[in-house]
Length: 56
Image (cartoon, rainbow, N blue to C red):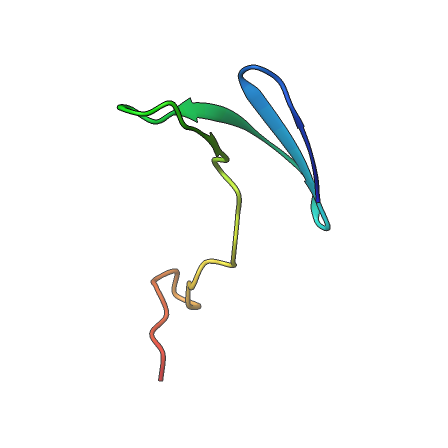
């Protein structure tokens, strides 16, 4: 994984492609955290009727 950063954005290259996020200030500290929104992590658990599927 590689990363490129600027003052407000961060772009990371993973095995699945590139994702872009933004740096967020953590209130009450001098620490910043990179946030990545809208990344799908799994297929939605939806059954044939469009309702959530249930295990078992």
